[in-house]
Image (cartoon, rainbow, N blue to C red; front, side, top):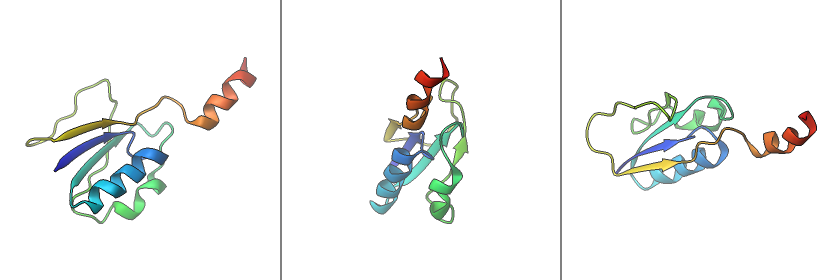
Amino acid sequence: MRAIVTGGAGFLGSHLCDYLLGMAGMCWPSTIWFTGSAANVLHLSSNPHFSLRGTIISESLEVDGPVAYVLNFASPASPVDYLLLPSRR
């Protein structure tokens, strides 16, 4: 099973990557590093079935071979950012 997880370096996306890799899957999380963090997926970097790609989800992503799932966990802001938005106005 091969999956692309957008927002894969975010809190939820990184846990989803953990789960998918634990199910003997292959995971290609993509992130724009806006609210995600490399620290969230650092422990997965040595897994040969894991490949982090810095991409923008509105642009195409080249992947060799078939993909079973595309899971969208990308968000323009984290919950902390949502709380800060009202105070910035």
